[in-house]
Length: 104
Image 1 (cartoon, rainbow, N blue to C red):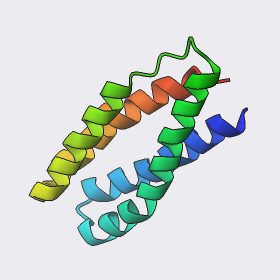
Image 2 (image 1 turned 90 degrees about the vertical axis):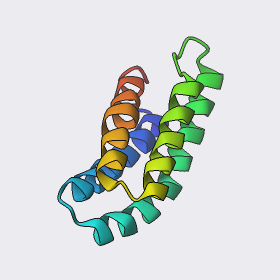
Image 3 (image 1 turned 180 degrees about the horizontal axis):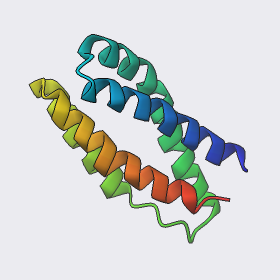
């Protein structure tokens, strides 16, 4: 497995833990974990962009990632933590899982 894929998968694992905390209504712990995971998330996104630059056939849809993150930030600003968890789970993590499955 490539180092790039490992970065993306570790971020996905950490973000999944955060989503699970939101679903468990552990808001304070979830927000603290999210703060930590955001740095990893930016690194993972940079990694995906770099991977696409190296593999022109890699089907990365930048708009899909950007829109999911914008929606997540809006939910966070509104304090709707269940919506935030849903967006991260179904719009972001599922797409990242699809992408990582296509990485070498």
